[in-house]
Image 1 (spheres, rainbow, N blue to C red):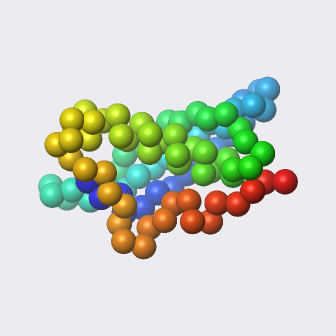
Image 2: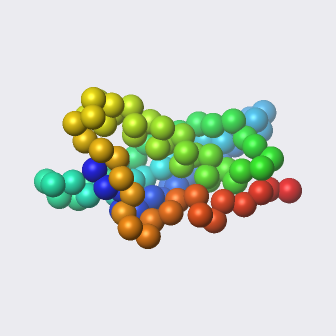
Length: 92
């Protein structure tokens, strides 16, 4: 299972402002072809990490919980050149 693209398709903050909520869409290449998977995510906000990076991190954590990944039957990989956290910056 190779992740070839990651897009945060919605991003919002909770009413209290302490959580970021959104959907992360993965484009995944497998032996059977390409598919998209959208994962709803929620993470606590951080003063040091961008909200989109928080959502992507949480969504990747959820991907790792898929039965085929968890069992070791399928390995989760990123496409060459895809670095989802490369541009991670601190938020003032």
